[in-house]
Image 1 (tube, rainbow, N blue to C red):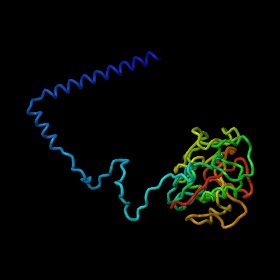
Image 2: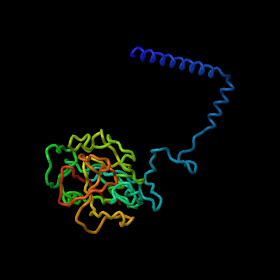
Image 3: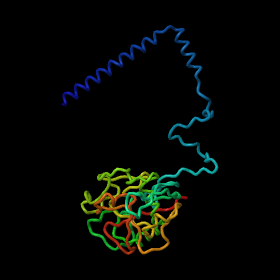
Length: 306
C-alpha cells in the first residue's frame, strides 16, 4: 500500500513538471512576438486604468464579503445595528434569538403539547450553555460527587434558587416559549439538530454513565439553529412559567409568559437520565413543584434584547 502511494505521488510530481515546462515554452513564444504586436498589447493594457481614489462603485455593487463600512457611517434611519453573541457576565456566552415567529407545540406528542401553532416572540438572548458549576455561585439543595467538575452543568437547585441566580446577574429564567424557540428554531424542528432522532448527538441514559457531562465537550453534542448547546439531554432545565396542561390551547400567540399562577413550574429538555426519545423531543413539557430538586435538574438564563 505504501509503495502504491509513493508511485502515485511520483506520477503527480512528474505531471506537474511537464505542465511547468509547457508554461515556460508558451511564455517564450509570447516573448517572440513582433515588436509592433507587443507594443499594441502594451497600449491596450495602458488604456485599462483603475478608477481614481474616492470613486464609488457602480450602483448596486456590493462591497466584498467581510468588508466593513467606512468608520463613522451610520445605518439607514430606522435600521437596527446587527447583533450577535455576547458575554454576560464575562466568560458566559449568550446567543441571540431574533424577533419573529416560530412553530411551537406538537400535534404528535402528549396532549399538553398541542396544538402546533405559530407564536411570535420579541428578540432575546439566552445562555449558550446550561449554567455550569464554575459559573454557579448560588445555593443548592445538594448533589453527589460524580456531578462535580467546573464545566459540568450545575445541578441540585430548586426553581427559586435558579431564578435567584439569574436575577443576581441582571438576567432571568427564559419563558417556556423562549426556551422552545431557542431549541427548535423558526421551523419548529423536532430536535435541536433537525427532525430525525440521533442518539449520538446528546447525553442520555444510553451513553451518560449516569452522570452529567461538560457543557463544552466536543463529542455527543449539538447546537440549535441559534447556537444554543445541550437543549436536549444532559440536564432538565427550569423555565419561568407556571405549568398548565391546557395552556398551549388557550395561551396567547405573541410573547406568551404562561399562566398567571399555579402549583407547578415547567422543566424542558430531558437529561442524562432520560431513556426515551420522546422525553428528549424539543416540544416535550415536564413539571414539578418549585421546591423540588434533583441531580439532573439545571437551568440557563435569558434576557431581553435591546
